[in-house]
Image (cartoon, rainbow, N blue to C red; front, side, top):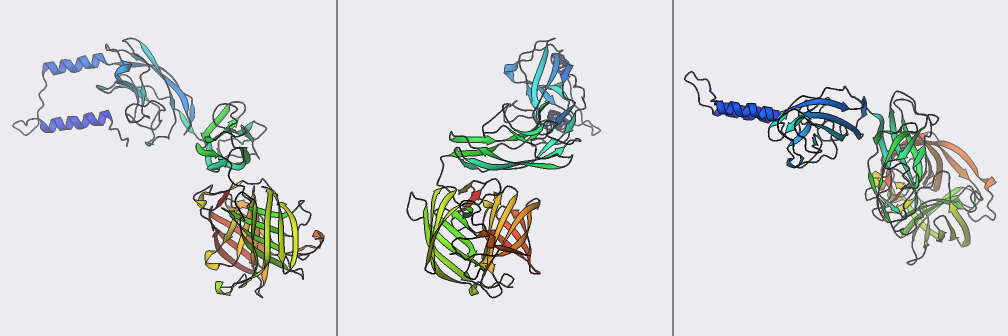
Length: 545
């Protein structure tokens, strides 16, 4: 029920109270004394306030949660003038009176709006008045279904006059908002990947040929985010959802901006629900973040090895996937703090680990042992290029490295999200905190995740497996696991043609949220499932989008 007690109900309660307080007759029945003067006053009051319906302009269908302009015209058939300044006479919703189903917009009186339309001007007897207003069905707190019917209301004297006829408006959804992913904080001028999902609740298929697309909410051609329209990626049948994944460019002027989108058809304009107005704070560009998968430059020149960076605050945790002197897969890790302020150089010790095999139950962390085999230094010239200098068992080399790109590159920022459960890009280093000693790097670009899993073979020596994983259902990614052999870490030149990959099983990632997932795999006929979460070593961690 509305928090405003309807006038009719209030009158009924007051009538009951008056009856209860009236003196009782000798036979026990209550009596109410009504004087001739009181009857005259009531008749005069009814003559003073009267109204008749004239016309109304209402669409045959209105999309719920969507602002829609309407109008109702009434005539003052009483003897009293309706004065705007007195804020006493309104057009009020009916059935029930003062309901909030249609959620009238921007007609605030007292503490709220939603159920009444303010008088636009003074209305003398025999004059007409047109109420032009906007409804947004089901967007207020009171949602009981009500017809589109109105009646005049005096705050002093109650409802009066004719009720408007029911135009039999059909409520539709047309385009139902499903989800939206965007960073809460962006660097000024940065290019950031985002996504918006809508469901087709019409009876027709959306196609690009028919002019369906996604548009930025607000004035036509709004380019706040560097793009005003996004092409439909594929036909969308009734009942199906479509996800628009695209890149936006943050404004160069610092401030807070709304990120909001709506479905559109070129022949008639925007329709359906509008995505929530998500506030995005555009700030001065922070320190560069190098999180992600890197390999030798130029790209592809030494395909077969790579190095992952989990970059949080001023520390990079690197996991390097390469090969030992026999060609067997070998991984080394390095915790590399920034060497000094205002530089993009990070250094640390390279550690080779041994531990329980990938299928050990339980996984005993006491059996994990790490040995220093050298050191490494990362020096970045920009956010996408750098060098990796290392010494391993007395052998020193330097590799020129660049990001490995297989889809839209996300933008990563330390501290972009206080709660990583809200993240929708899963790029990061993941682990099982109760099984310290192994982990899995997820590089998430577009609809693909490249997973690099560092674990141990049955002889407890390092083993790494990789998988290119595609989404098969919401928050679910599936791929084939490969184990590779190749040229040793110190091979000059490194011949990518010598890299051999062998299928060893499959893997599935199922995300409960942005920080929690299940990692299910089958390797050489052995199937297991591990609970994994992001490894955060510098709270609140890094989020990519």
